[in-house]
Image (cartoon, rainbow, N blue to C red; front, side, top):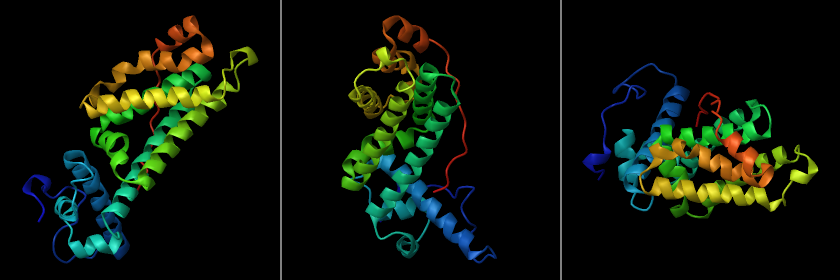
Length: 234
């Protein structure tokens, strides 16, 4: 039975009870989105391992039958939530990176977008930074794919630098791995809201192998331009 702490009042996007004339496709999309939102909520509150179908359907305000109309079980539903959130995250970071002028600004602005995205929605941070590691090979592979994408953005940018400034290819993967560990520790300790304040130090750490101490310090201290992109529908 779903616990009372996981139930919540009917949200604005939820359908009214009883009969209505809404298109079937709209109803199904609404139900699916409510389930995904519930996955995010319950995972943040209780953790993936403790999350039950009863928790999910109680939070989403749907029946067990409706849940299984959309998903085969908890794992598939969680995988879908991970895909939705990471797709949105990648879109935000990529937009900031691509709109920046030059390598240093791209690194700084992309990192700023990443940190702000997590700080603005701590539930997403819990999902894709911490709980993903408890959810099995599929979600972990998706997490690693995201980290590899970030590393590839760094590598692509570094290729445009003068030859003498290009560190070994593994440098991009190394700096992204280090950033990931720092962010994981902060989210795990409930300090997600403090992530944007880490930008100067983290940007410096990312830029140092490519630009050297003095230029990395100057560039990391500059104010980022945060890009905005529409949320990606699940």
